[in-house]
Length: 112
Image (cartoon, rainbow, N blue to C red; front, side, top):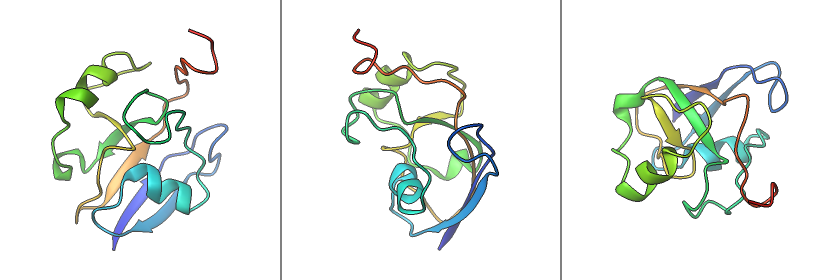
């Protein structure tokens, strides 16, 4: 099992969280299975940016993002070099430290 540390987020997990995940599980699925309600407006189909996270530690252990994910990430609020869509980033054997950005852009709920 791989350990994922979620840094505190004012609304989603104010205390932060430490969870365990099976390698091959997406960061989003691992979070949701452990009560961390990451937004995922497109139902994890790589069609929005609401599940955007920043991988503060362990980024290089993730499989490289595919072009579709990279294109979407360009539209994410607070994009950083270690940004990933949590629905697409699969956990490997290296522990991760994840930051959930303060804001997200939800094209569905914001009527864009």
